[in-house]
Image (cartoon, rainbow, N blue to C red; front, side, top):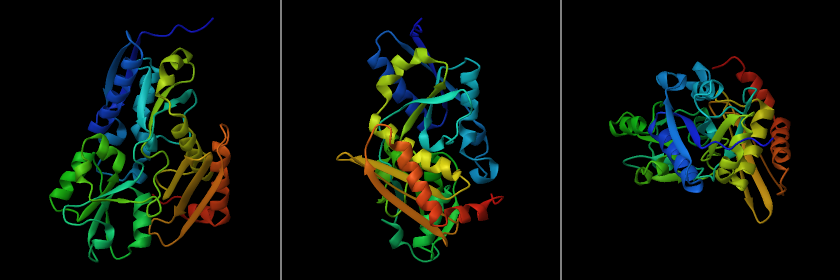
Length: 315
């Protein structure tokens, strides 16, 4: 017997300004597409939000931003959870699935500074703030003369620390700044060649329990096929290599003209060792995981697993 489509959905979301923007965006799309549907938000504070003074790599990784939301799904207090896909671990707990992935916003890293237009303009010893080992390793490899300092907090907190003079520049996700109406703060962009984005960067994911087939007719309109394909490829690469926020790793896939392309890297945190790989393949509906695995294999052949083994136990 077909499941009855619900007339009310509760969205679990973190309470940061960016997370709430994303949840409100999903709510508005659902309400517009399904007249009569009631959509409510359940704001939550996660372990990752409560420990903003510590490095993610030291306190357990990005999964700390999703566990409480998943608990709300398990307990029936919420029907779906809205995430930035770059924050979602590549291995979901049993019983959960990513039911839809929305169209990707700008996936690039943004250079934010009140006095400079790019990393190349910074004087030796200038302080650059980032919370990401992925960004840190790539900046250190290209600009070893700069000082990289840890930067945690929500977007507004990071910008305030820059404005207070604690940093000469900070690196943030362009997607988050644009979604919050802060695009004017962007002094420049790091191209994907300069700074390979995080897996899933710029994409919004909708998580649900695997047994909630009743939600699928409502959520289908949220899924962007090309974005979902690319994110699947990126996550397959990261999953194969055991990627996490304790590993400087990035992956970025695109689709154009019937072809899918992907580039990725693995590095040591100081950028002294880095392995890159890229490949292009025919874009087929079921080829995402194959492309991701091919990239992972190329990285492994180049020495990525040796880098990863050296990082085991280092956090």
